[in-house]
Length: 582
Image 1: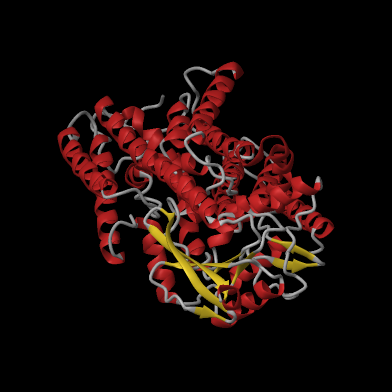
Image 2: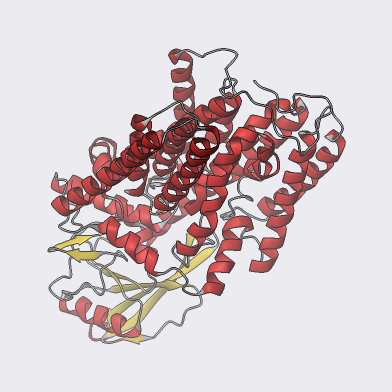
């Protein structure tokens, strides 16, 4: 591996003197790479058995699992999840799964059609556990992309980047939940690899076409992929124009060909996805989501600034401002430790060890109080914090670092508001944290062995806490849904938007579920329950919300307290019709 400091007198500010095209000391065969890939997949598979596959990391996953269950039941690829009360509520105001759209006679709760279609045969074979193969593959290919970038930028075998991205970063958490994040990151990272080859002169218009297609594939899953695509092509354009004008390494014709090929790649995939959506759903859902996201830019500026701080530094253990301070302290200590470890010789080993020890104390204080989401992209990934400090010393990594950081404020400006806290590692900016981890991984071989192992150990600890949190959360959600359901025809009504969508793995189109968030909706739900002659109505609301004694013709008869997610309780109140109680 090329060492970061190639001169004894190098300083912290020194840039790495990396050859134009660094060579690896050895080239690992396909067999070695395949074994590493399989080992990573096996590690994910083992971790997945810690979870209940019916409990998820977020409500979007519940909606997809409900869709897959209905596709399996009907033996089709039709994502219609149905609505048992459609005759009573044709507008779908009370559809049990929040965010369900009525499209062409279908009830659709799909945010990404290709992911669901790819998972359908897996679900048919092994249910919700089998579909985890897709996010696991996404995470493993993300690790391979990290290795490819490391080899191109700094030479060596790139295995540090592979293993720390695969097992010591937020990617490992998203490998265990049926969400699009891990596959989306994999597509974007490989797009960055091809863009790097383009800037480095390794690839021509075919590489540009591949990069565009990969960014397009990512955009069919994650809207923020469009931001990373725009930033990456902008950075590449600046580099290529500079080399054309100043160094005359490229021709304008070649640049035009590459630009056209890139646009053809991303445009072709996006058009194909829209045609697929219209063929299956009768409408284009991704384009609608992208337009909706763009329309929200600039709304509630103060809220967006707060959410930006939360998804940068938050630890979700204290009140909002204290969370930022604690997360910022942990990140600063890790960054300083990495900076000292990367100093020439062992000059900064002691100072780095003290700083890293203090960071460990901060993290232990957060984790010891109970597991929870760590929403900050830097606080959930200590190696990303290290990458901020030392990645820039690798001159050839700077264009990648520019893509990683320039995209962040744009993503923050356009991301959906309201969900900053309940996420792991800033899920909208996972690409940024992963590229920063790659930056740290390239510098690690030059660090003292004790220093780099301590950094990795801390990153593994934080990632393990996320995996443990997902396990705890999944079992709690599954147990809560089991406790709330009934097979006797009772109508289950949620007063909260996402409770039933969170438990989408338990959804059945014939089960009598409703979501009624307003008082008027609750009255309508009680009327529907009476019309279908339900034996009871069971109402779920967050603990602390007022509980009415009567709802229409229904009278309260029983109340239970159920833990829905760790630390969050709901009231489950049963109502029977007053006439039946006389």
